[in-house]
Length: 49
Image (cartoon, rainbow, N blue to C red; front, side, top):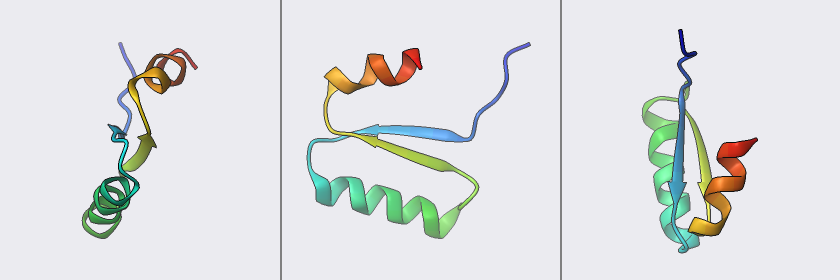
């Protein structure tokens, strides 16, 4: 059985968008971890960790 994670990965190149999305989740559901990445080149290395 696969482990369920409370992590959302947001890929956005705009720092303001990253801040807004992270802030909304922190205020509405702090149990969800928000990881922000700046571009698609960062996604695969993050997922392979």
